[in-house]
Length: 184
Image (cartoon, rainbow, N blue to C red; front, side, top):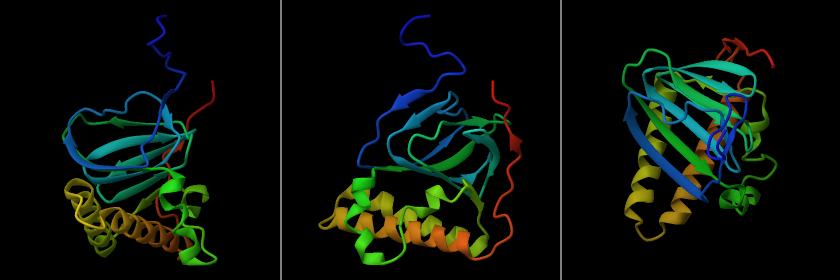
């Protein structure tokens, strides 16, 4: 096996930028192989029918699903049907939001990543709210208006607090996993 090839059981490492966000429509997943990052990843499925594997858990990733993937969690996204899908990909380093942590007091803004729940199915109003945050983050990231870095951090912090509140809100199983993948 050449050094650039990875066996199906291995995972590729991709370093993360301090902050990255994109919104794309695709037919083929750019993440079909198992991989991991040194940053936090939030995937939001706008539309489509995908499957997301995080560690040994498999999740149906359809429109309105928000996935929180912790640093160094091995994961992949596969297009089950081969039909077009739209997703928002958000990657960030801990340091990007570190100084904001003191602003929220007792709440750790990154706690949604260690909750044990990787995926949440959002309702209509929740989807509108989250998609609005993503639109603003993308605009700030692309246009870099004065103060854009601080505003991106505030928007990200709002998304993280919102996600934590959803998890703490007593919603029964925000999204059920489809099953555990057997260890090999």
